[in-house]
Image (cartoon, rainbow, N blue to C red; front, side):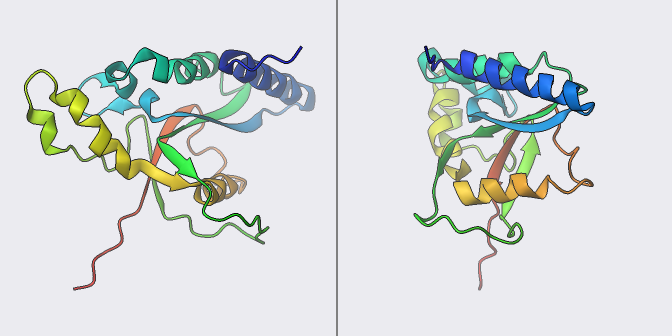
Length: 176
């Protein structure tokens, strides 16, 4: 019987990858997708998910809890913490090499985090700040695929191993 719970899927994939790496004598490189809530909420000492309803973050918490105990000597894992992601186009073109994805990437906290004025509202500001701040962390599937494809190069392979990473589209300079 097929089970579709996030814990079961993450555990099954990661344990299979660990076994395959041990069989070949070298750990596999694996990317897992979680939610932006797993990252630290800048300047708070808490995670973003601590300010969100539990039912919206449970599956991401389970994925993170599955990966964190796995040694990077057994599986070179990265948890990509996504806010919003969708396809750029309906076509699925195979490119000869990764294109420049235009993403700013950071570990543990969302890169380039900017608070909204609502953060200063007493008692509820920390919660109100999340929606406008997180909206800038959207991306397209193709950019994420290019980010991951860059990691196939042996010199970049170890970057972000054992890390929770967030990403944000680079701001384009305004022409004035």
